[in-house]
Image 1 (cartoon, protein in one colour):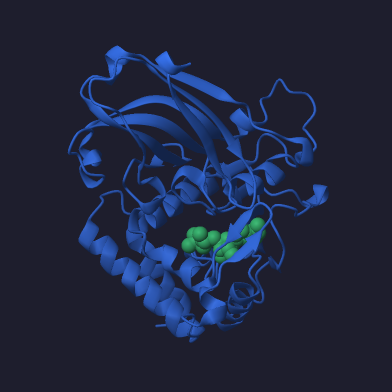
Image 2 (tube, helix red, strand yellow):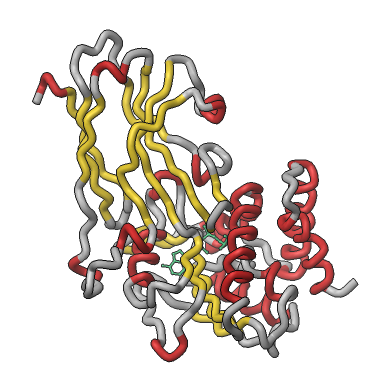
Length: 339
Ligand SMILES: C[S@@+](CC[C@H](N)C(=O)[O-])C[C@H]1O[C@@H](n2cnc3c(N)ncnc32)[C@H](O)[C@@H]1O
């Protein structure tokens, strides 16, 4: 079997509507084996393991970026969301232009599509900031015989990349995040790209939400999946609509951009029976393709504070997402009787 067919076969499980974990896990192993064989490169070395640090967050080392494939539901949901977006856009225009920011060494999320569509149907722009990942990506493209495809690969920073207005993408994909949107550059990347394109462009993921939640005593992070938590309020959303609302005539100079501060108050009555404050991450990849709480490393809740027993006051939480060398949702928790 040739490599193109092997990739199509190995990745077909991602497109099955029925979620079978065993099959998904086998498929993911096969997909990874193929990529490792083609690349034939040990990434578990210093330049492979080193993350690269910037003023607005870090880019993962090549070794870690390659490992993302193993996050089964993440990879499945992204591929399914991308599939839906391509089908939707393809019905009205050809060729489609897909911009993939942060490909890692394997362009993991887009490779399943390259061989499922003809060269004439889709053109691609791949951005990768890490030089070692970029080098591996170049080699992969050569070894897969993709020279004839319309693929532009660029070793640049997606937080600063300028989109050619005569060659605007139809779909923009980036998975450069961790749970609670800490450390990596998902937000500055989307901010930069959303600022440059028309509203019709589909962003994958379509929406990322950070919320404050509560959980009960003795419930571990794993058990939270069984809904033994309460989601109080969403405090930060990354989506075209939330970042650049349609009624805002002019898009903004990115350097001057700052996210809204949000305050939430949780009444004492609501806190009864709960012992911890949590930060919850949810990802809507595209339409009904979602990554729910605890489905993936991207959506593992984070404990942020113990709630004292017999608390008499309400809790006030002030939040604001801040982009810095360590991006994060900044928060301050105050008990209202101490205000
Ligand atoms: C979490 S990994 C994901 C790899 C792959 N896309 C996947 O989903 O399996 C993120 C990748 O984005 C790259 N990256 C991070 N920040 C970037 C930036 N500002 N510009 C371009 N690439 C970036 C990292 O170097 C890394 O390869």
